[in-house]
Length: 116
Length: 115
Image (cartoon, rainbow over all chains, first blue to last red):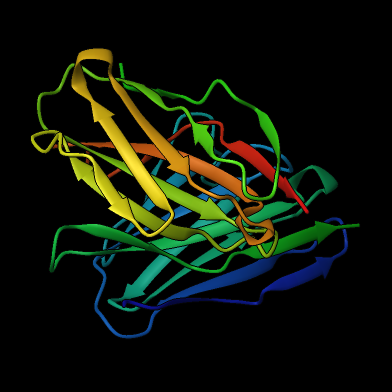
């Protein structure tokens, strides 16, 4: 099956700093990737849709200047949480859309961000 | 509007019991897809099944079975003879045709299987 990786799996950063999370599709090209956030004991909430070579589309209520998304290649999308605050602590999950075989989203293992 | 409702927040069963997780969806589209995912404590989502709106056949895969009923807009998931390893959060999700491939997730049902 298709494989999507995320790096890092866990990160702890200090309040006010920025942190970058990478999402890679390892065995297929993905023109579209999605970024989700999941707070403890809650569901996945779509933050934004990342499109290769163009600007990301953010969901309502998500600050695009705070959550910078770059999709510079067909296998890599990055999410940068800028000026992180404790309330940004969450589990961030990416998925990559594979067009072949049914437009399926393949999920990464997630990144647990803790802001102290 | 599109919506997925998983009314059961938490379910606790004893090993070997059968358990059904409910999923009710809302959409006005005639073409859509329904999914079930498992999220174990590790956090990684595990794909279980995809169903399109034109296929109402029930499906069985080992101890797992799914019942899709368009008349009641439900896509329920049953685990037969549950095992401790089934303990996880289970999410039902909806994807509509033309919806930019976005997935709409339900709130999830936390299943605890006790020995």
